[in-house]
Length: 353
Image (tube, rainbow, N blue to C red):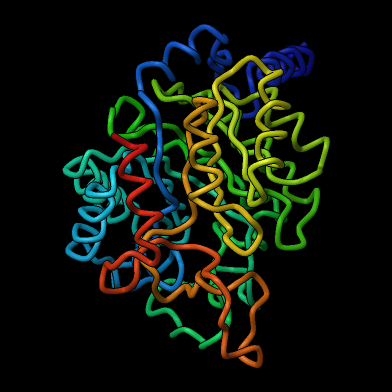
């Protein structure tokens, strides 16, 4: 009899969610549209400080730089930008949760000072060098000529693959989101950047499913999303079926970007392009930004101030390819806060008024 009761209880818990707690429902289309209308047109950037070679460096005790962040976000405010997407680093949280929450709160305060709302992202599978797992503390210096060579994913590929560690990731998501679930400085929770990237493939899918479940258990006032970024139909369907707001990445021409926008409109929900701008590929401020404004699609270009990540270089650029004389791939300001292209910044200011 006790055995049967246990089976029934386990079945009920499974119905309630992966962790045994009731999950909030997905936002209705009407709720998502009402939220989006209240925001005004969203135009911002993926932000990493110019002195950080990766997001571990941005948040780490040894290198978090609030004064620099303040100066850079003041420059963003002057351009008219009103939102910023940042990847959080699990390894820094795991080392000292209280420090991490305090530091994130400090970052949000700086953003709020400059009228910038924040889209935090919990996980990231991207790898641009040999580093597949983050290590806290002092980070490597740039390798000249190598795009984002010391990029560090979060939580790292080892933990993504090893489901025995996912209980630690659940605690991280729930504690961070729980702390800021009613905070109007948070725009939207981007749960996972480019899952399956970095050679992980479908090994990322268990964590993708779990992070949506964990977030719905927390039930924040802000919407949830994972962006469409590749041709993985199973991943894309799961993300669009569970996201409150449809988000996507597109580093292509205005024509291709418009095609993707029109395709995503079929979901009947507001749309934000959370990664774009690749000048060599035709994704430019001159051609694509007016499209986003016309279609009322929110947008966050990659990069603000060029720095240690060397994202002015194209993907795959290596030291042996130097010197690089082509157009910058990402970023809009030089290290001394001057426009890479004055016409770009003038158009930004005009459209963001």
